[in-house]
Image (tube, rainbow, N blue to C red):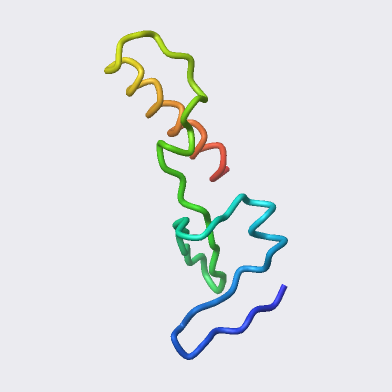
Amino acid sequence: MISTITTKGQVTIPVSIRKAYGLHPNDRVDFIVEGDRIILLPVKTLRDFRGSVIGSGNPDQERQTAKDAVGLRTIEEMS
């Protein structure tokens, strides 16, 4: 898909891509440069993973479990 860069350096992400990847206003994205390519990736936060881990009742343990889950998902997404 083709988009145009504005004079302010802004680019519109097509609706079909925003819907497919669940992108919403104020979401963050990361630009990765690989050779002659620019890759745009959504930035996930711990809030995006809320509810994906069963609670143990220990907040410190839950926090570490959530961080581990985010790490694993990030590795999977980058593979």
